[in-house]
Structure formats: C-alpha cells, structure tokens
Length: 79
Image (cartoon, rainbow, N blue to C red; front, top):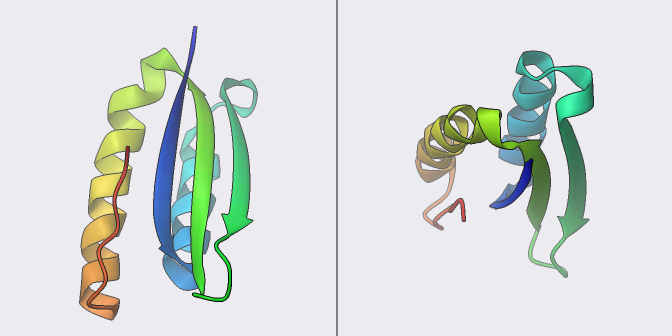
C-alpha cells in the first residue's frame, strides 16, 4: 500500500532531503516529484511511499525541517 507525503523547503535542503531518502529507500518503494513554487526559491516534494516507510520519512522530514530553520527563518513542514 502507498501513502503520499509532501515536504516543503528551499533548494539546498530539498536536494539533501531527496538524496538521503533515495539512499535509504528500496528502489521500488517510492516515487518522488519535485516542483518549484513560483519565484520564491522554495520547492515542494511529493513522495509516494510504501506505508512501511512512513515513520522513516516523517522523521527525516522533521530532521530536515530543523536544518531549514537554521538556514532560513521560514518554516518547513511535512504533511
């Protein structure tokens, strides 16, 4: 069964987040779509993942949200 999560962040943090996600996840367990949000410099990452990875991806999103907070005053969220 698949679940969809969305992560928002700036380019640097999104690249690091996706790179780590790809490194940790089995090849056939996820689908990733990255979308630039207008001229803001922020990106949206939609991740369709196997439900067995939900907790892992949520923890990663929280960790990368803290990283973004240390880089930029804007917030990063995982939904």
